[in-house]
Amino acid sequence: MKAEGFVVDNLGCYGKSIILVLWGFWLLTGFVLSIGEVFQKGTIVEEMVFDPNNQTKLTYFGAFSINRTYQAVISGKNTSEIEEMMNSGREVSDVINGIHHNMFGEVKTFSDYETGLSVYNQFQATSLKPFVKKDERVIGMRDITVSGIGYFWWGSNTSENFKKATPTNLTYTTKCSFQACECAESDFVSIQSVKQESYVFLFGLDPTMYSFLIFHSKRGKPEYSFFKITFSLALSVVSIVFLIVYLGLYLLKALLTKADNIGKSVYLNYITFVMLIALPVFNNPIVVGRYFYNADWMIYVNDWLFSVFEVALVAYIYTHISVTRLKVFEEKFDVISTLTFCGGIVMYLTFYSLYFVMYSLPTNNSPFAVITDSMSIGLLFEGLSSFILFLLYGWVFVLLLFLYSQVHPPLYKERVVWFSTFTAILLVVVVLHFLFFQDVNPNTPMTKLCLQLISNLYIFTIAYMFFPSPRNNTDAYGVDVYVGEYIPFSLN
Picture 1 (cartoon, rainbow, N blue to C red):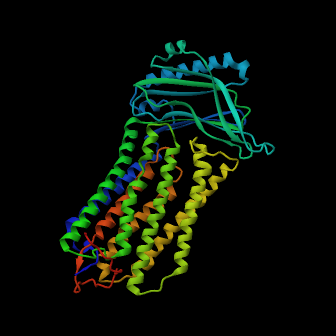
Picture 2 (spheres, helix red, strand yellow):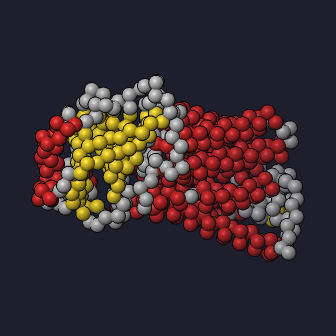
Picture 3 (spheres, rainbow, N blue to C red):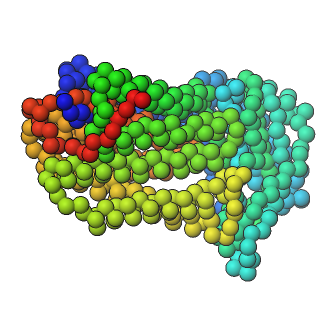
């Protein structure tokens, strides 16, 4: 008896149907959630830009509407409540302009409203990102301070509460590069734990000394936020459970068959083990901390970890296709192609790491940030890393379509078809993500979570399909395919 490792040939209709149903369900779920992210159904983002001409531009991102009034409708609140807040806010803006005109000159007012905050809405924040005017004479980082008058009050009866509100001199200090014209973004007002309340925040300032200023008000719907927390944790928990069960079944199989070398397909079984062990790390639940601590940099740390998984996954597929052809066709090892592919992986990790260190951390006020004049260059490395990863996945896709498909029947009946089908689905999902979801709402990484889910499902499927299964010399599919070296296996 030989342990070839292909239980897929003996699954039967029920087992194969279950796999197909799972893939279909999660592909549909991922598609719906990703499209929902495009329309910002889970997060309300309000942006105010003070441009160089001292003109104020307001943009609102909400489901099906760009009208601020709809924010209350989306949240299931009475529109009269937010209308009252808006009217009160306009009155306060006039008051600010009247009182503080002499102090600040031409005053512009940023206003932020929210109704019915809940305990799950802990990542509500108003952040400010200044852009300074270019000055080549100023070398190195400089601190700048944005000063203004702020009003903040609670409660649905905004008119009454504003009468009790005391104006506060608010300042925002950050480091800026006058050569890169960019500054670090940080939270101006942060609300991390609140009751079922409403609030209004207004801030008046003179923006003329800056190239432009961008205020962001970001808040997530409580139910949507809670779902994402659950989703993130579920990925890690399921990956750990699957690994434990897989190892248990693997040892049980070895015990029942009394095999000393159950791991026959070395390059597949062993690499699958590595991928399964690494999954809980790559599903790093640190992103969950984003919803309990107002720190956008946590999302980018999670993205960096997943970027390592992405190249590990594409290397995993490349290895399987290459070694399969070596065994089936007895081809010579293609040193140049392999070194080129590995070089692409190294370049991707290098460029993405440079983007992560030079731009993601500094612009999101990470405690690990090192702000430099060259931080804007990090965006260039982001583009290069994405392009290289796109090429790597495209390379693997070409190998799958034109080289892996040359493995003819009888093998083609089961093994190649199943592996090719699920690998092709994964690669198509990745390509769609590259084309349509790269720059969509980075603070609501729903598409990233969906991509992680599909990648997890792929690893689970391959691990299950290629679970060690004893095969004999009369096997209809041949015994010389996927044959690696015998690896001693002992339960002692």
